[in-house]
Amino acid sequence: MRFKWYGTATLLIESGDTRLLVDPYAKRYARRAPVPMDEARTADAIFVTHPHLDHFADVDAFSEGVRPVYVSATGISHAKKNGLDSGCMRLIAAGDEIGVGALTVRVYPARHCSFDAATILRILFSPRTWLHAADCISLLATAAHYRIDKSDVLAFEITDGAKTAMVFGSAGMDAGTVYPCGADLLVFPYQGRARMDRELVPFLNALKPKAVTIDHFDDAFPPITHRVNAKRLAPTVGRYLPGAKAFVPEENVWYDI
Image (spheres, rainbow, N blue to C red):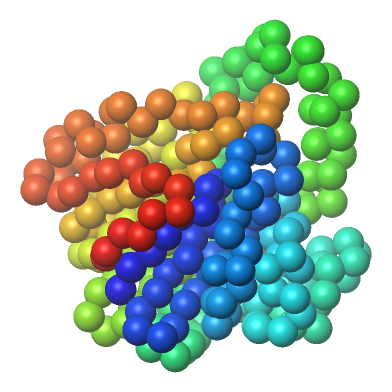
């Protein structure tokens, strides 16, 4: 079992001949190399942790209306309102278990990370924000079409029977949920608050993964976002889970799980 990170929260997960795509985003706003669509479109199914703009709005570019797209009821509603092809979409909710080829996906409730005061102030007082105010307004207007409720945020346990990855689309856990422990890999979104290393600690304590990697730390929505410095990632994992591996992925590189 292995994975590749395409930027933002987009992951391609592979086991044998089966591929799953998680949270597809085509980098419409980021000034970076595009996603390798020919490879991304080989996925057998698409899974969406939550139907925000940067996890869902580009899904048609990846699905081409053919393979199933698993998303919450709000996501299907957003698709219909925003002109996306809802015909290929399948409803998922916490508690579901979906088999796709060699992989099984178990769905858990999660929560969305909320911006803290330090992050909001950094955005508001950044010269880049004001120099590109029109872009900010346009981006926020588009994002308003993809609002969600807290129950729309999901986490996925993805396994091929030998290896398991626990994938969160945002850095929040549901307080009433007991999550599976000991996954071979935790994928943690490293964006949204000033000290994401601190936000990681409850995940380490609750999930006790064997390895940790991050996504969503890139500058996906300039000028509002910025690339997050992950220098505290490895020391934090080392302190709370001695022996666990921690790494920052590079885009378009395969990593074994």
